[in-house]
Length: 426
Image (tube, rainbow, N blue to C red; front, side, top):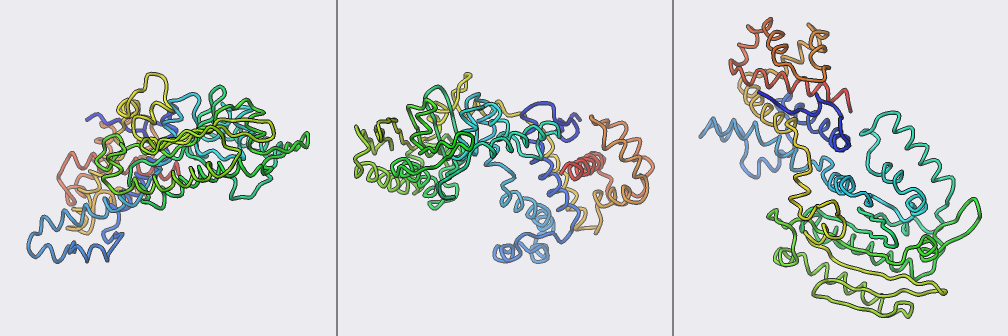
């Protein structure tokens, strides 16, 4: 029995920082489902599907027990994003020196003046980082706010999921995990960001003011001042519904491509009806267009595209990453979540049959009997099965009344320890 558990090991790598907070949340929520016999997320849906334990048990008691044990857990997993969307952005940023995430147009001064520190600020949520690093980040935030004012409307301060800054090119993209993520409305919102950014350029609106010098800048002013010659705007889709890398054909077959084409045409009309946009090149089949934007003697190239699957890799990755499988292979595998899920399913079966289970019993011990002894096990950096077995010997009689499944007993204690680590870390 050799589990690789992040919550016991603790944060050792930059990727661990990205995972730790979400792992704590998943372990806590899944375990708390195991502590409550009547835990239910959607009683109307259960009734609609006929997934009512008492009703199923009349015909098949074992299957009724399976459904009642499993359904709340998978219902939680289905409805909980658990940071999945932001994790995709974070892992792309982690694997690429010139890429960051969740960037606003108002943050361009910070991006251009100190990209590495800006990336640090955006890479980690406050709960993912140690106090010393958080202190540094807060100082950077304060410095950024003191140097520049955002002069345009709040609606003009557009946020993109991914930003790549390299040499004279700035790439901004909104990214979705699957072609059906968020439906047509979410897709429309992402394409609208591209349109609104182009409008912001064309309107020649003052967007930033340097509070030190008093200088005011339009978006074009600030981009060209910082050496940007190409502004690349895209909407990106990683996977088809079946889990294969996203393709235009997969997008079309699932009925979502038409929304992208409609939004692409709206952007094209905006460009073709204003004289500041020159040398327009368009390809509706590839969902791409490019043009030169000129105003007040300044010029920038604009590129717009819909990116699918492998094309996202080409635009945002370096360091030998050529496929999404390469990305997946760089993500560290831990056992915390699947082991919690497996253990809680088994323990919920016991709870339904006996009105008590191991998680509840271990919690009773922790709260009233040998709290300090359990703490010595829980707050170690590594897991010692022998320590667990020795500790549990004193409670064999009570444990045997609940279950004689030895592997499950060990697993349940491990998960209880993970749970206590998780709630101590949130």
